[in-house]
Length: 116
Length: 153
Image (cartoon, rainbow over all chains, first blue to last red; front, side, top):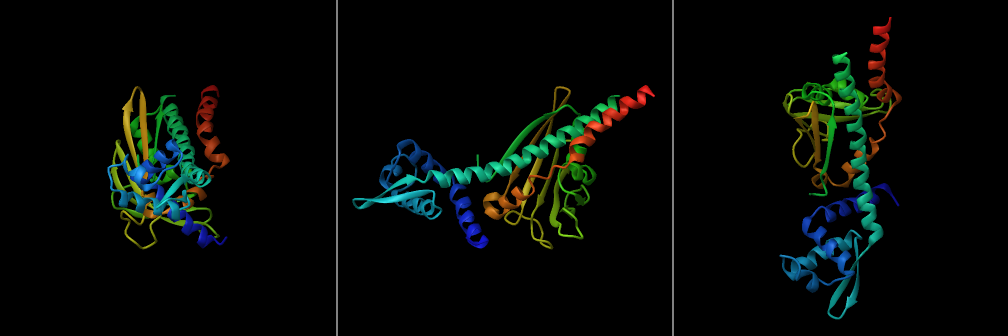
């Protein structure tokens, strides 16, 4: 896979998971195992059409997988992709954990040096 | 919480004045993050931070101070394209909030803009995560150690 392709996928992944409604939908799908635009819209303050649109975004980012269910599609969370998204965000967080630990060490050393 | 935002809090046994200096001054920044830092710690000041060797294959990253109110708040934008003014949408915003607590300081860090910037910014961040050198780790310990030696001699 080329780097450019990987970045496109990652961009989609990021914006897909960046939306609060879509995150709520992922939560619902994880809790209930699967759902359609109709069943999800019962739990959300948005229309069935809006839910279907959000599901399309999640699908393109590889975060959910659709199977035909009568006139609708039934969606399940693609857990490997979700795990990947969470892991990448966590790695940025751990970079800051390390930086803040260094800030703490430096500041506390200065404080101790001033007290001595 | 927005998933495009990173929030961290850490308690530091040092006064807000000291912590403010450590998070804001270029000299201190060099000890906990980039290899080089050139900017004035004043609002609007545009500069750069460098990872690796500037003249070899190092990476120069734009850095603009947004707010500096000692000893309470220091914020900056980074990762905007060179020559562009740092605004929402082209950069990541890092904010340090300092609150006096007990004898020390509660330092809160927020980094936002990932959602606007997209995934490449997160990858960029990831690239810089392992910027830990031996000196970063040992120098802070060395200072108090040197102080004890001076007392004895």
